[in-house]
Length: 465
Image 1 (tube, rainbow, N blue to C red):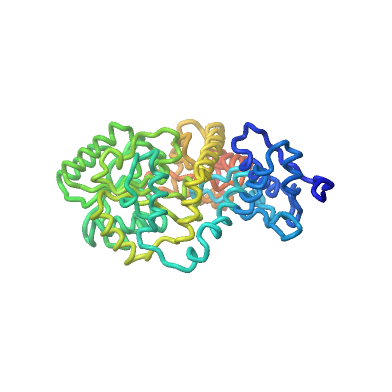
Image 2 (image 1 turned 90 degrees about the vertical axis):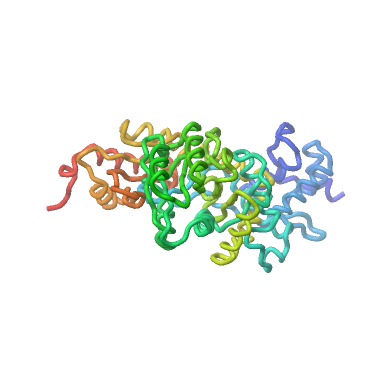
């Protein structure tokens, strides 16, 4: 009888077309907590009352409350009812004055409180799934079978069906590269790469004493003829490349170039390390090298750019079981294992669809920021791609990368000069990270400063007296 006299103080905004009703109610709870409509300690309506109010089955509401409890959003109190447990989530950063650190290449923040609440709820739900074992036990160097299977599922749209035994869970892309490169080359031996390449590769090669040889590129990426020429004269142990949304130039290799590179590598017996950090961002991209030559390619699929930089998880797909054993040994000898907690979070996000939702949100926000770039930066100066959240700024003469970087630093904007990427003579260019700005207004203000500055001559913009 008490339920019948209960005055309902909260009602979820749902539609019966929103999919399973119990999930829609749980999502509404998460969203209203995020937006502050449900505050900590607030009592939810009794299940039977809410069912009658919404005109749905009692079991549906019961299942929804259980789902919300599983996500860590609410708690049941014996004899009292169900109460909100989660604090309000903050989904945006405080204002920074409009000028940002564009040296970091981060995925942009998306504005979706429901999805943000879902991310945190999934993390809270790990306790129910794994208990204390997750926190108090080591896992195999290559990752637990469950997490390897999640990695295979995440990569399936790009690589097709992969046996989980060929997927290793690594401590970020850098950890995967360390294991792969250490397995393929020794100190003094050579690895080749695009002449403009990922700074992390340069750091690893220097640390391991491995020689790096740059290969010529054009605006479409690595030139197969340069790779062929090197292989005819030298014996590189591997080719490292970043074929999709190349960092920093955003170039994407065509399928024809990919096929040519695979054919050259096969002919000369050269292994390929494919760093596909940005491969998930385009809705459609040419097939990865690992899909064209799975027996030849060590494929690195990191989550930092397409899901969350905080996870520090990457999936390394190796050619065969023998390679897997060797790479596991390298992981054991260097980092021991990837964080089991981060791997479990990644697996849950992948399995319940949260990862796909985040990827879609990042794609949408990236496209919006690229429209701002197209509007504000001078035509022909910025080399970029609608799916990338970075841009390669080729400087008009007489600007040099050093002068522009210094002037921008004085204006409160950090960029990365081409020196950080170059294996040969650095071009007059800088990389802009578009994801660091907290919002579109900050990005606009920063890009306007850059546009105004390069519109002047270096001498005219100097404040030196």
